[in-house]
Image 1 (cartoon, rainbow, N blue to C red):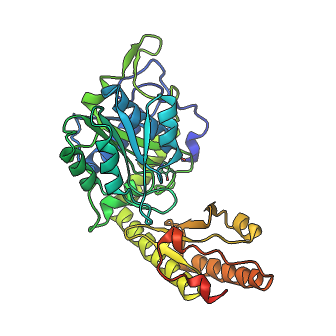
Image 2: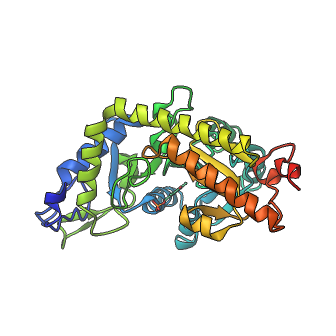
Length: 362
Ligand SMILES: *Cc1c(COP(=O)(O)O)cnc(C)c1O
């Protein structure tokens, strides 16, 4: 792809309406969007979407569509949702109700129902996580829909699915619940630099064509329609995504998803064998474990930590040897710290394990 670096490729405006700027990659963008619309079962003439600059932008777009359809709606999102969801609430001045999460990271549906019942008079805009950032948890979309209907929100709700990482993995796991527009959802977004491994930040958002009519205006200066969050958009990103999708194909992606799940299980098992508290949600490649006390180690492995826990998101480029090296070094560092009388963190509360493994050490 290096040969394209010398061009200033810009897909500004609506991907489906040619603007007056000629150096664009709209053909690639639309091909990629077609692929995703097909993946999430929305017909070619019924979807709208675009290649965003990141997953944040996809969430900002999906939730904006929800707000435009239901100006007096309330955003409901579990407390494990990505920060961009709460940012959307602040930017759009939409009231945001935080729902409790289970210890797995999944939305607590009983709490969701209770909070809906407190606000029967106002429509619901719901952010559903298809893989939370920290624990890789999948919210129960089917249950969320039936709760909305049971509580009398029929035709008065909008669902945005935040599938930044796992939105691309779920369709390739046979036993996974389906994210599809055959269910009453309004939009789905994913990041392109996560599972697809695009070398520049990007993402994809898909919604229903009928929905964008509420938020688009014609801009003479671009001779295009303004329905995107950002104006100028990275024209290289669609080419990278197009190239990757074509090179890997459905078969290649399925293989990579299976490899990630297998390797994540390997990592979780290795950690437990070595006495490190760890957990892994079913259908996820995100392994959660006790936060290492050694900051050099955290920095070296670029670990993301949140209070007592850290996580490893096992991606296709990581092999078993790398994971074993990681565990070996973690355990060595931990033993060293133990001798230096640091307390090993107890994470039973964070990951829902009944007996605390760390008590073996203390
Ligand atoms: C990573 C992530 C995002 C978006 O992140 P970007 O860095 O903007 O691509 C959104 N939601 C979840 C759950 C994520 O993990």
